[in-house]
Length: 245
Image 1 (spheres, rainbow, N blue to C red):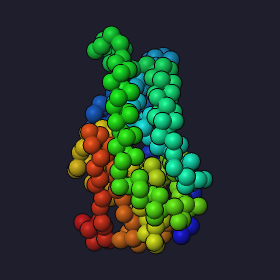
Image 2 (image 1 turned 180 degrees about the horizontal axis):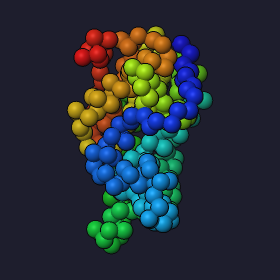
Image 3 (image 1 turned 120 degrees about the vertical axis):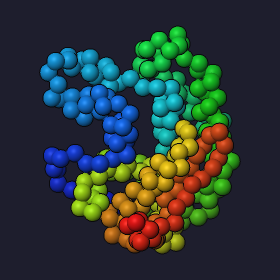
Image 4 (image 1 turned 30 degrees about the vertical axis):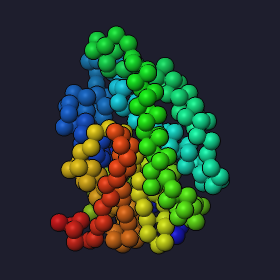
């Protein structure tokens, strides 16, 4: 099964996305500065960009884990030999130091703490990666998904633009791959579990994949993989009627 995203011509209206919705729901000012900053005239652009560049410790830990797993998948796509676990963890530690050294953190900027606890950061990221390596999905990738690895989609480029009932939407997925005529979608999570939000996210992924690849939604299995505090999975089995409801 060959996977290929559809391309859409540029249209000016904004599309729906889970992250955009969350930003609007959390802070209207942040939403305005993020998506309408080019229309702002009473605040210097450098101040807006400085605020937009702020990150948080949990968010940046998630970025490191996502990028390390992306690198792992690219490597696995080329070679199914066992990884050197120590090199894997050393790579993650180097990435962590690199990412955290070049970012400005909300916790520091707003005086919530004087410095970052890098021991905690390294331990948390290491625990996430250890949970992944010891998980059923790690071994399943080697045993089953490798058979069609040429058609893996690892962090697909772009913003995941799609159409849901004719409306523009963005569903950016971490990892898509075919196995035995089915499509599996994996989304890595390093933060808190939110079943309502995450079920909605998985439905969006499956609907977007069905639209983009013109395949029945009941052949698509979206799955969230929680990597801390322990390994856990949330997978949905969908059909057309359940999605429409």
